[in-house]
Image 1 (cartoon, rainbow, N blue to C red):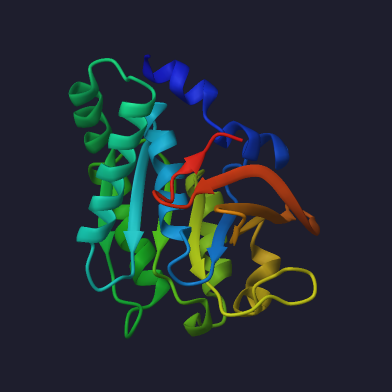
Image 2 (cartoon, rainbow, N blue to C red):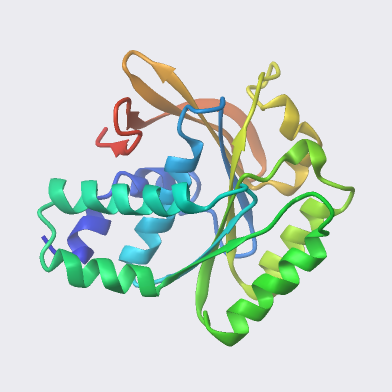
Length: 230
Protein backbone atom coordinates (compact mmCIF):
# COMPACT_ATOMS: atom_id res chain seq x y z
CA UNK A 1 0.00 0.00 0.00
CA UNK A 2 1.23 3.52 -0.75
CA UNK A 3 1.20 6.53 1.58
CA UNK A 4 -1.83 8.15 -0.03
CA UNK A 5 -3.98 5.06 0.50
CA UNK A 6 -2.86 4.73 4.11
CA UNK A 7 -3.72 8.34 4.96
CA UNK A 8 -7.07 8.13 3.19
CA UNK A 9 -8.00 5.07 5.26
CA UNK A 10 -6.63 6.40 8.53
CA UNK A 11 -9.16 6.48 11.39
CA UNK A 12 -7.95 10.03 12.02
CA UNK A 13 -10.16 11.04 9.11
CA UNK A 14 -13.08 10.24 11.44
CA UNK A 15 -11.70 12.64 14.03
CA UNK A 16 -11.47 15.34 11.35
CA UNK A 17 -15.06 14.68 10.31
CA UNK A 18 -16.19 15.00 13.93
CA UNK A 19 -14.56 18.42 14.30
CA UNK A 20 -15.84 20.12 11.16
CA UNK A 21 -13.04 18.95 8.88
CA UNK A 22 -10.14 19.16 11.29
CA UNK A 23 -8.50 21.40 13.85
CA UNK A 24 -7.67 24.10 11.32
CA UNK A 25 -4.77 26.49 10.84
CA UNK A 26 -4.55 29.08 13.58
CA UNK A 27 -6.19 26.84 16.19
CA UNK A 28 -5.04 24.92 19.27
CA UNK A 29 -5.98 21.30 19.98
CA UNK A 30 -5.38 19.12 23.04
CA UNK A 31 -5.34 15.35 23.50
CA UNK A 32 -5.63 14.67 27.24
CA UNK A 33 -5.50 11.56 29.40
CA UNK A 34 -4.39 10.43 32.79
CA UNK A 35 -0.63 9.93 33.09
CA UNK A 36 0.60 6.94 31.13
CA UNK A 37 -2.65 6.29 29.29
CA UNK A 38 -1.55 7.37 25.82
CA UNK A 39 -1.79 11.09 25.08
CA UNK A 40 1.79 11.27 23.78
CA UNK A 41 1.24 8.26 21.51
CA UNK A 42 -1.90 9.90 20.15
CA UNK A 43 -0.28 13.22 19.20
CA UNK A 44 2.72 11.43 17.71
CA UNK A 45 0.24 9.47 15.62
CA UNK A 46 -1.34 12.78 14.53
CA UNK A 47 2.12 14.07 13.61
CA UNK A 48 2.97 10.89 11.70
CA UNK A 49 -0.29 11.15 9.77
CA UNK A 50 0.68 14.65 8.64
CA UNK A 51 4.17 13.53 7.69
CA UNK A 52 2.63 10.73 5.63
CA UNK A 53 0.81 13.49 3.71
CA UNK A 54 4.20 15.11 2.92
CA UNK A 55 3.58 17.90 5.42
CA UNK A 56 6.22 19.27 7.78
CA UNK A 57 6.02 19.06 11.56
CA UNK A 58 7.92 20.66 14.42
CA UNK A 59 7.68 18.68 17.65
CA UNK A 60 8.34 20.77 20.77
CA UNK A 61 9.01 18.75 23.89
CA UNK A 62 9.13 20.11 27.44
CA UNK A 63 10.26 16.73 28.78
CA UNK A 64 13.72 16.35 30.30
CA UNK A 65 14.63 13.80 27.63
CA UNK A 66 13.43 13.45 24.05
CA UNK A 67 14.71 9.95 23.23
CA UNK A 68 11.33 8.46 24.20
CA UNK A 69 9.66 10.79 21.67
CA UNK A 70 11.90 9.49 18.90
CA UNK A 71 11.10 5.95 20.04
CA UNK A 72 7.37 6.70 19.73
CA UNK A 73 7.83 7.93 16.16
CA UNK A 74 9.84 4.85 15.26
CA UNK A 75 7.38 2.45 16.91
CA UNK A 76 4.30 4.04 15.36
CA UNK A 77 5.84 4.13 11.89
CA UNK A 78 6.91 0.50 12.26
CA UNK A 79 3.39 -0.56 13.25
CA UNK A 80 1.78 1.39 10.42
CA UNK A 81 4.19 0.05 7.81
CA UNK A 82 3.71 -3.55 8.94
CA UNK A 83 -0.07 -3.45 9.33
CA UNK A 84 -0.64 -1.61 6.06
CA UNK A 85 2.11 -3.39 4.09
CA UNK A 86 3.69 -0.06 3.18
CA UNK A 87 5.65 -0.08 -0.07
CA UNK A 88 9.29 1.12 0.04
CA UNK A 89 9.02 1.45 3.80
CA UNK A 90 12.61 2.55 4.46
CA UNK A 91 12.47 5.24 1.77
CA UNK A 92 9.21 6.52 3.26
CA UNK A 93 10.75 6.40 6.74
CA UNK A 94 13.65 8.59 5.62
CA UNK A 95 11.23 11.07 3.98
CA UNK A 96 9.27 11.34 7.23
CA UNK A 97 12.39 11.96 9.29
CA UNK A 98 13.40 14.78 6.94
CA UNK A 99 9.98 16.38 7.41
CA UNK A 100 10.22 16.39 11.19
CA UNK A 101 12.21 18.48 13.66
CA UNK A 102 12.25 17.87 17.42
CA UNK A 103 13.05 20.79 19.71
CA UNK A 104 13.51 20.57 23.48
CA UNK A 105 12.82 23.29 26.07
CA UNK A 106 12.47 23.55 29.82
CA UNK A 107 9.28 25.16 31.08
CA UNK A 108 11.07 26.46 34.18
CA UNK A 109 12.76 29.81 33.72
CA UNK A 110 11.98 30.06 30.00
CA UNK A 111 9.18 32.26 28.68
CA UNK A 112 6.77 31.08 26.02
CA UNK A 113 7.89 34.06 23.93
CA UNK A 114 11.42 32.59 23.98
CA UNK A 115 10.11 29.17 22.96
CA UNK A 116 8.04 30.59 20.12
CA UNK A 117 10.96 32.71 18.93
CA UNK A 118 13.01 29.53 18.65
CA UNK A 119 10.23 27.76 16.75
CA UNK A 120 9.84 30.75 14.42
CA UNK A 121 13.59 30.76 13.71
CA UNK A 122 13.47 27.04 12.93
CA UNK A 123 10.52 27.54 10.57
CA UNK A 124 12.31 30.32 8.71
CA UNK A 125 15.74 28.70 8.60
CA UNK A 126 15.27 25.02 7.90
CA UNK A 127 11.67 23.92 8.29
CA UNK A 128 9.82 26.10 5.83
CA UNK A 129 6.30 24.99 5.04
CA UNK A 130 5.62 23.69 8.54
CA UNK A 131 1.98 22.64 8.73
CA UNK A 132 1.68 21.66 12.39
CA UNK A 133 3.41 22.07 15.72
CA UNK A 134 3.18 19.22 18.22
CA UNK A 135 3.79 20.02 21.91
CA UNK A 136 4.28 17.42 24.61
CA UNK A 137 5.19 17.71 28.27
CA UNK A 138 3.71 21.19 28.69
CA UNK A 139 2.33 21.65 32.22
CA UNK A 140 -0.81 23.75 31.90
CA UNK A 141 -0.85 24.40 35.65
CA UNK A 142 2.46 26.25 35.27
CA UNK A 143 1.29 28.37 32.35
CA UNK A 144 1.62 32.10 32.96
CA UNK A 145 -1.20 34.51 32.15
CA UNK A 146 -1.18 35.05 28.42
CA UNK A 147 0.77 31.91 27.49
CA UNK A 148 -2.11 30.20 25.72
CA UNK A 149 -3.07 33.45 24.02
CA UNK A 150 0.55 33.68 22.81
CA UNK A 151 0.35 30.14 21.36
CA UNK A 152 -2.93 31.05 19.69
CA UNK A 153 -1.56 34.28 18.22
CA UNK A 154 1.50 32.42 16.93
CA UNK A 155 -0.67 29.76 15.28
CA UNK A 156 -2.74 32.43 13.58
CA UNK A 157 0.28 34.50 12.51
CA UNK A 158 2.23 31.53 11.11
CA UNK A 159 -0.76 29.70 9.64
CA UNK A 160 -0.21 26.46 11.54
CA UNK A 161 -2.23 24.25 13.86
CA UNK A 162 -0.83 23.37 17.28
CA UNK A 163 -1.58 20.09 19.08
CA UNK A 164 -0.76 19.61 22.77
CA UNK A 165 -0.70 16.47 24.89
CA UNK A 166 -1.95 16.82 28.46
CA UNK A 167 -1.97 14.66 31.58
CA UNK A 168 -4.86 15.29 33.94
CA UNK A 169 -5.90 14.09 37.40
CA UNK A 170 -9.64 14.74 37.28
CA UNK A 171 -12.48 15.89 35.02
CA UNK A 172 -15.19 18.43 35.82
CA UNK A 173 -18.90 17.87 35.22
CA UNK A 174 -18.57 18.73 31.52
CA UNK A 175 -15.76 16.23 31.02
CA UNK A 176 -13.10 18.95 30.85
CA UNK A 177 -9.80 18.19 32.63
CA UNK A 178 -9.69 20.45 35.70
CA UNK A 179 -6.16 21.61 34.85
CA UNK A 180 -7.38 22.87 31.46
CA UNK A 181 -10.36 24.91 32.68
CA UNK A 182 -8.41 28.19 32.70
CA UNK A 183 -7.15 27.57 29.15
CA UNK A 184 -10.39 26.28 27.62
CA UNK A 185 -11.30 29.53 25.87
CA UNK A 186 -8.11 29.34 23.78
CA UNK A 187 -8.55 25.64 22.91
CA UNK A 188 -10.54 24.89 19.76
CA UNK A 189 -10.57 21.08 19.99
CA UNK A 190 -10.26 18.99 23.14
CA UNK A 191 -10.19 15.20 23.10
CA UNK A 192 -9.80 12.96 26.15
CA UNK A 193 -8.67 9.33 26.22
CA UNK A 194 -9.78 6.79 28.82
CA UNK A 195 -9.40 3.04 29.28
CA UNK A 196 -12.64 1.21 28.47
CA UNK A 197 -13.34 -2.43 27.68
CA UNK A 198 -9.80 -3.25 26.64
CA UNK A 199 -9.32 -0.17 24.50
CA UNK A 200 -8.41 3.46 25.06
CA UNK A 201 -11.54 5.29 23.93
CA UNK A 202 -11.59 8.85 22.62
CA UNK A 203 -14.19 11.40 23.77
CA UNK A 204 -14.67 14.71 21.98
CA UNK A 205 -15.10 17.28 24.75
CA UNK A 206 -14.81 20.53 22.81
CA UNK A 207 -15.50 21.00 19.11
CA UNK A 208 -14.60 24.61 18.38
CA UNK A 209 -17.45 26.59 20.00
CA UNK A 210 -19.32 23.58 21.39
CA UNK A 211 -18.42 21.96 24.72
CA UNK A 212 -19.98 18.53 25.04
CA UNK A 213 -18.64 15.08 25.93
CA UNK A 214 -19.32 12.79 22.97
CA UNK A 215 -17.65 9.41 22.53
CA UNK A 216 -16.09 8.91 19.12
CA UNK A 217 -15.75 5.74 17.10
CA UNK A 218 -12.01 6.05 17.58
CA UNK A 219 -10.08 3.84 19.94
CA UNK A 220 -6.49 3.14 20.86
CA UNK A 221 -5.14 -0.38 21.06
CA UNK A 222 -4.45 -1.17 24.69
CA UNK A 223 -1.14 -2.92 24.09
CA UNK A 224 0.46 -0.67 21.50
CA UNK A 225 -1.37 2.58 22.34
CA UNK A 226 -1.73 3.11 18.59
CA UNK A 227 -4.98 4.28 17.05
CA UNK A 228 -6.98 1.21 16.08
CA UNK A 229 -9.60 0.86 13.38
CA UNK A 230 -13.12 1.58 14.63
